[in-house]
Image 1: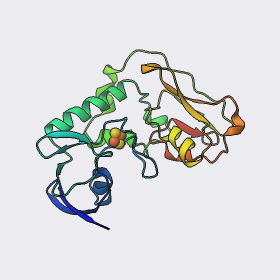
Image 2: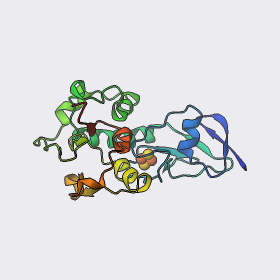
Image 3: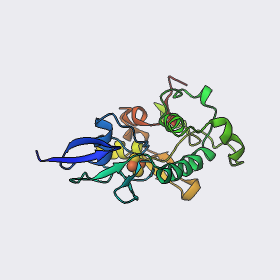
Image 4: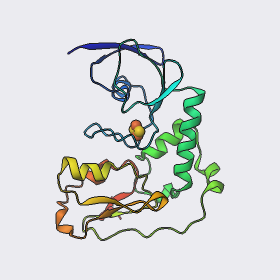
Length: 210
Ligand code: FES
Protein backbone atom coordinates (compact mmCIF):
# COMPACT_ATOMS: atom_id res chain seq x y z
CA UNK A 1 0.00 0.00 0.00
CA UNK A 2 1.43 3.39 -1.03
CA UNK A 3 2.03 5.71 1.90
CA UNK A 4 1.31 9.44 2.06
CA UNK A 5 3.14 11.80 4.42
CA UNK A 6 1.30 14.87 5.64
CA UNK A 7 1.01 17.08 8.72
CA UNK A 8 -2.12 17.62 10.76
CA UNK A 9 -1.98 20.33 13.42
CA UNK A 10 1.81 20.25 13.19
CA UNK A 11 2.09 16.48 13.71
CA UNK A 12 3.86 14.40 11.08
CA UNK A 13 1.53 11.62 10.00
CA UNK A 14 1.74 8.77 7.51
CA UNK A 15 -1.51 7.61 5.95
CA UNK A 16 -2.47 5.00 3.38
CA UNK A 17 -3.15 6.36 -0.10
CA UNK A 18 -6.90 6.69 -0.65
CA UNK A 19 -7.75 7.58 2.94
CA UNK A 20 -9.59 10.80 3.64
CA UNK A 21 -8.23 13.55 5.87
CA UNK A 22 -11.01 12.89 8.42
CA UNK A 23 -10.27 9.14 8.59
CA UNK A 24 -6.56 9.88 8.97
CA UNK A 25 -7.12 12.42 11.73
CA UNK A 26 -9.51 10.17 13.70
CA UNK A 27 -7.21 7.19 13.33
CA UNK A 28 -4.42 9.29 14.83
CA UNK A 29 -6.49 10.49 17.76
CA UNK A 30 -7.16 13.97 16.36
CA UNK A 31 -10.81 14.92 16.79
CA UNK A 32 -12.57 16.74 13.97
CA UNK A 33 -16.27 17.43 14.61
CA UNK A 34 -18.55 15.47 12.29
CA UNK A 35 -22.21 14.48 12.14
CA UNK A 36 -22.84 12.89 8.75
CA UNK A 37 -19.70 10.73 8.56
CA UNK A 38 -19.83 7.00 9.26
CA UNK A 39 -16.90 4.69 8.37
CA UNK A 40 -19.19 2.19 6.57
CA UNK A 41 -20.89 4.77 4.37
CA UNK A 42 -19.96 6.94 1.42
CA UNK A 43 -19.30 10.49 2.70
CA UNK A 44 -22.30 12.63 1.86
CA UNK A 45 -20.73 15.93 2.98
CA UNK A 46 -24.03 17.37 4.17
CA UNK A 47 -23.22 18.61 7.68
CA UNK A 48 -20.10 20.65 6.73
CA UNK A 49 -18.81 20.36 10.31
CA UNK A 50 -15.65 18.52 9.36
CA UNK A 51 -14.19 21.61 7.70
CA UNK A 52 -10.42 21.97 7.98
CA UNK A 53 -7.91 24.40 6.60
CA UNK A 54 -5.63 23.04 3.87
CA UNK A 55 -2.40 24.82 2.95
CA UNK A 56 -3.15 28.41 2.20
CA UNK A 57 -6.31 28.88 4.23
CA UNK A 58 -8.51 26.95 1.87
CA UNK A 59 -11.49 25.43 3.73
CA UNK A 60 -12.48 21.90 2.69
CA UNK A 61 -14.70 19.17 4.11
CA UNK A 62 -12.23 16.62 5.46
CA UNK A 63 -14.60 13.64 5.05
CA UNK A 64 -14.41 14.02 1.27
CA UNK A 65 -10.82 15.17 0.88
CA UNK A 66 -8.28 12.44 0.13
CA UNK A 67 -4.82 12.75 1.67
CA UNK A 68 -2.08 14.06 -0.59
CA UNK A 69 1.68 14.02 -0.30
CA UNK A 70 3.00 16.97 1.75
CA UNK A 71 -0.46 18.29 2.71
CA UNK A 72 -0.54 20.72 5.63
CA UNK A 73 -3.82 20.53 7.53
CA UNK A 74 -5.12 22.63 10.38
CA UNK A 75 -8.20 21.26 12.14
CA UNK A 76 -8.57 24.46 14.17
CA UNK A 77 -8.12 28.08 13.14
CA UNK A 78 -10.13 31.27 13.69
CA UNK A 79 -11.76 30.84 10.27
CA UNK A 80 -12.61 27.15 10.78
CA UNK A 81 -13.99 27.82 14.26
CA UNK A 82 -16.12 30.72 13.01
CA UNK A 83 -17.77 28.66 10.26
CA UNK A 84 -18.21 25.57 12.46
CA UNK A 85 -19.72 27.63 15.25
CA UNK A 86 -22.21 29.24 12.86
CA UNK A 87 -23.29 25.79 11.57
CA UNK A 88 -23.70 24.39 15.09
CA UNK A 89 -25.63 27.42 16.32
CA UNK A 90 -28.05 27.12 13.41
CA UNK A 91 -28.52 23.43 14.18
CA UNK A 92 -29.17 24.08 17.85
CA UNK A 93 -31.58 26.94 17.14
CA UNK A 94 -33.75 24.30 15.44
CA UNK A 95 -33.05 21.46 17.89
CA UNK A 96 -34.78 20.49 21.13
CA UNK A 97 -32.48 21.33 24.06
CA UNK A 98 -34.03 19.25 26.83
CA UNK A 99 -30.86 17.16 26.95
CA UNK A 100 -31.50 15.97 30.52
CA UNK A 101 -34.57 14.03 29.40
CA UNK A 102 -33.06 12.68 26.19
CA UNK A 103 -32.08 8.97 26.28
CA UNK A 104 -29.02 9.78 24.15
CA UNK A 105 -27.66 12.38 26.53
CA UNK A 106 -24.00 11.65 27.20
CA UNK A 107 -23.63 9.75 23.91
CA UNK A 108 -24.87 12.52 21.65
CA UNK A 109 -22.46 13.70 18.96
CA UNK A 110 -24.02 17.17 18.96
CA UNK A 111 -23.30 17.53 22.69
CA UNK A 112 -19.72 16.48 22.02
CA UNK A 113 -19.36 19.04 19.23
CA UNK A 114 -20.88 21.78 21.39
CA UNK A 115 -18.42 20.98 24.16
CA UNK A 116 -15.50 21.08 21.73
CA UNK A 117 -16.59 24.56 20.59
CA UNK A 118 -17.49 25.70 24.14
CA UNK A 119 -21.11 26.39 23.19
CA UNK A 120 -23.53 26.14 26.10
CA UNK A 121 -27.19 25.18 25.73
CA UNK A 122 -28.06 27.95 28.19
CA UNK A 123 -26.55 30.63 25.96
CA UNK A 124 -28.37 29.22 22.95
CA UNK A 125 -31.86 29.20 24.52
CA UNK A 126 -32.73 32.83 23.67
CA UNK A 127 -31.71 32.21 20.05
CA UNK A 128 -34.10 29.31 19.59
CA UNK A 129 -36.77 29.75 16.97
CA UNK A 130 -40.27 29.96 18.33
CA UNK A 131 -42.00 27.04 16.72
CA UNK A 132 -44.22 24.28 17.88
CA UNK A 133 -42.78 20.87 18.71
CA UNK A 134 -43.26 18.52 15.80
CA UNK A 135 -45.09 15.27 16.57
CA UNK A 136 -43.03 12.11 17.00
CA UNK A 137 -43.51 9.40 14.42
CA UNK A 138 -44.38 6.27 16.37
CA UNK A 139 -45.66 4.26 13.41
CA UNK A 140 -42.66 1.91 13.21
CA UNK A 141 -43.18 -1.17 15.43
CA UNK A 142 -39.58 -1.17 16.71
CA UNK A 143 -38.48 2.43 17.22
CA UNK A 144 -39.76 6.02 17.25
CA UNK A 145 -38.52 9.02 15.29
CA UNK A 146 -38.35 12.47 16.88
CA UNK A 147 -37.98 15.18 14.19
CA UNK A 148 -37.22 17.77 16.90
CA UNK A 149 -33.89 16.06 17.51
CA UNK A 150 -33.03 15.03 13.95
CA UNK A 151 -30.01 16.77 12.41
CA UNK A 152 -30.75 15.39 8.91
CA UNK A 153 -27.31 13.79 8.64
CA UNK A 154 -28.80 11.04 6.46
CA UNK A 155 -26.88 8.22 8.18
CA UNK A 156 -30.08 6.29 8.97
CA UNK A 157 -31.42 6.64 5.42
CA UNK A 158 -28.11 5.61 3.85
CA UNK A 159 -27.64 2.72 6.31
CA UNK A 160 -31.08 1.32 5.53
CA UNK A 161 -30.50 1.64 1.81
CA UNK A 162 -26.84 0.69 1.39
CA UNK A 163 -26.01 -1.57 4.34
CA UNK A 164 -29.31 -3.36 4.87
CA UNK A 165 -30.68 -2.96 1.33
CA UNK A 166 -34.21 -2.47 2.64
CA UNK A 167 -34.80 1.28 2.02
CA UNK A 168 -37.48 1.60 4.69
CA UNK A 169 -36.49 5.20 5.46
CA UNK A 170 -36.45 8.25 3.23
CA UNK A 171 -36.39 12.05 3.38
CA UNK A 172 -39.64 13.91 2.98
CA UNK A 173 -40.35 17.68 2.72
CA UNK A 174 -38.11 20.58 1.78
CA UNK A 175 -35.88 23.11 3.54
CA UNK A 176 -36.67 23.46 7.26
CA UNK A 177 -39.65 21.14 6.76
CA UNK A 178 -37.41 18.20 5.81
CA UNK A 179 -37.62 15.11 7.99
CA UNK A 180 -37.11 11.37 7.86
CA UNK A 181 -40.16 9.21 7.19
CA UNK A 182 -40.95 5.49 7.17
CA UNK A 183 -42.37 3.81 4.12
CA UNK A 184 -46.02 2.98 4.61
CA UNK A 185 -45.27 -0.74 4.22
CA UNK A 186 -43.64 -1.38 7.63
CA UNK A 187 -42.89 -4.99 6.73
CA UNK A 188 -39.94 -3.62 4.71
CA UNK A 189 -38.23 -2.82 8.01
CA UNK A 190 -36.30 -5.87 9.23
CA UNK A 191 -35.81 -4.45 12.72
CA UNK A 192 -32.04 -4.68 12.40
CA UNK A 193 -31.88 -1.35 14.30
CA UNK A 194 -28.66 -0.37 12.56
CA UNK A 195 -30.23 3.02 11.87
CA UNK A 196 -30.94 3.48 15.59
CA UNK A 197 -27.44 2.41 16.60
CA UNK A 198 -25.88 4.85 14.14
CA UNK A 199 -28.05 7.90 14.84
CA UNK A 200 -25.51 10.46 16.16
CA UNK A 201 -28.17 12.22 18.26
CA UNK A 202 -31.33 10.90 19.93
CA UNK A 203 -33.69 11.13 16.98
CA UNK A 204 -34.25 7.36 16.64
CA UNK A 205 -35.02 5.61 19.88
CA UNK A 206 -36.10 1.97 20.42
CA UNK A 207 -39.61 1.69 21.82
CA UNK A 208 -38.32 -0.28 24.77
CA UNK A 209 -36.20 2.71 25.88
CA UNK A 210 -39.14 5.14 25.77
FE1 FES B 1 -17.95 15.84 6.60
FE2 FES B 1 -20.42 15.92 7.58
S1 FES B 1 -18.73 14.81 8.32
S2 FES B 1 -19.60 17.01 5.91
